[in-house]
View 1 (cartoon, rainbow, N blue to C red):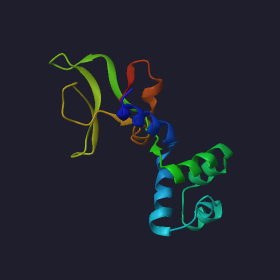
View 2: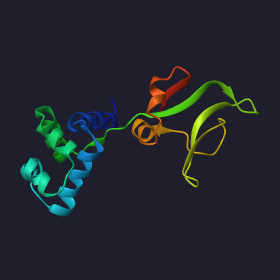
View 3: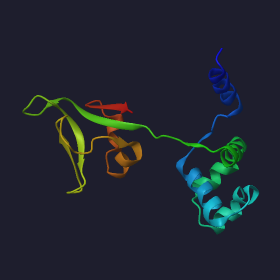
View 4: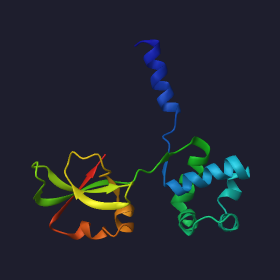
Length: 151
């Protein structure tokens, strides 16, 4: 075995796997380390979170014992931010005049959602939260709509 390969294996063993945390936890860790320069112990205190106007979701999250362990690991070793699923919404059985299947699109210029062909330039990938906030939460329960999770 080459020395380079051996060093790579040793580094993988020594490097702990980074925990995956929600975005709001990652944001809080950064605020504590960068701006508040507080200790790990203080950063985990719900009262300190309240004093610094943190969201209720963070307080509920940190109260769970398994999440406290994740928080400590994230603080010490770094972390990866949890990726939210992204969806493409298609209308079943409909096509435009070019034969492209219709999908839900968004024009940031006009601030409108509409159905458009597959090859358009408009935004067509959405999180569940974006869809619900725009009034399209119903697509997850509609048989006439195809909801596909994408990368």
